[in-house]
Image (tube, rainbow, N blue to C red; front, side):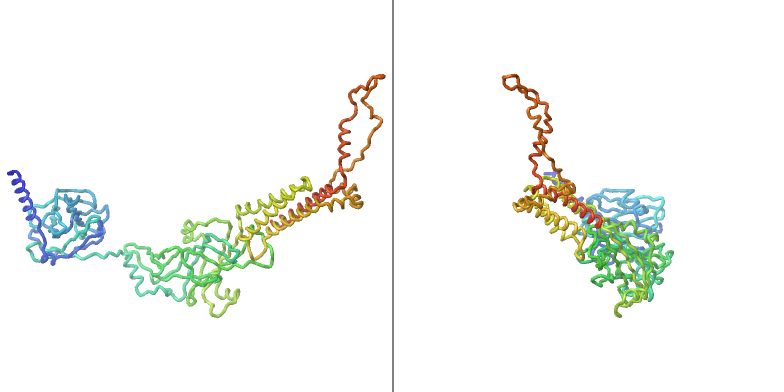
Length: 612
């Protein structure tokens, strides 16, 4: 029991001592201070500049004195710096109060590193009270941090090269909200130790931007007559044959100069370049004159306008352009899928009241080279080349008659696009079935005639081509007839003719017609057979003198068979000749096969040559 009482006594004594040692600010004292609240974690985002020391310390050896109060669960960070927005390598004093979950206090010589002194301070901060602290730096380099009302500091270091403190800032820890009171007077003394003002967060470039944008309207050009350099890069292009449209992805590089926006870099800490949003300053806008809509070109990328100290502006953007491209319809055939097109894209300034003189940027220009690696050309089924030309308003009016409402004094940019389709996969998918079908059809003319097998073969080929034509209709151009379609239709027609003839030759009417005397004379004539490469007719003769050759008789005995000396191959040939029926429907069908083979070969060869 006595041990418990002793423990309780010491615990109460320690708590009483802790209450006495922690100096707490009341409302009256807090009203004499300025306040800063940290909610962004371990970030020194607000800096305060020490303007002048209005309080004279009692000790003349003290060069810097600061009285603050902190209310936080842990991690009250104080930064003392000679410069604003101190970096990782800048020499500073950083004091961490209640770090490690409110267990220690540490003094560092650099930001987040180089600790010089540390002390265990369990419960030094409170989330419910404003606890006061002081910071003192003597002229000889002694730095002290301690509680208000205590003579002995919590941590103290001696710096042989003390820093001149011009700025201070506060921070906390992630998830910890901290409240700081600063510019507070010393307890029991009237007047402040120092007076500070918050540093403007805006950088030098922000101040320069505000100066340039002052009294400037983004919708108005800097001058009445603007000279704009423009360069174009063709990223990709394709032709929509159904709508007769050219669809291109273009990259533009525009450059213009605003002399009123120039500045001296020496007066702005060496700033030589600024970036503006597209809506902050004026930039030239364009439209596609030969498109179905007259809306301004929409930049796909949210790029920035770059301005250098001479007032020169550069803006790079990408856009998708759809323009009409009506092909020459004087010819009814084209070479699809190996077709080519010549199209133009007419681009002019969007605002009619603006007077813009265009000048082309060469591909070797430094401004264009900078974006060449960014705007990589996309490879697709089209091989494209683009050439740009600038026409004055007078030249354009001579080339293109327009209404008075569309007259503009600005120059016009015309992009000539030449396209050649080089779709290897499409060519293989389209030409391979054609070549295979033509080859098999020609080979069928050298197979056995008047059989149902060939009839079914021709029917299958016709069905295959018909299905292919139904599908190819959705991808071929509609403004004229591709010569490839003529090829497929010709092959289909030839197959149907061969199929019809094959069926007709198998009828009994043709067989009866072949037995007539005129047809027999034609089919058995030597000229006809030589022209159509038919088998020559042979005359069968028999040698009766050698009929009993190979037999011998011996008196009255029976006949004895001796080995034959006759020509067996000749007898076989004679037997085959006896079985050949010259002048029948089979030979007529064979003659038609030879004729069709020759005619089809010539027609297909001529059509392929004309197509390519």
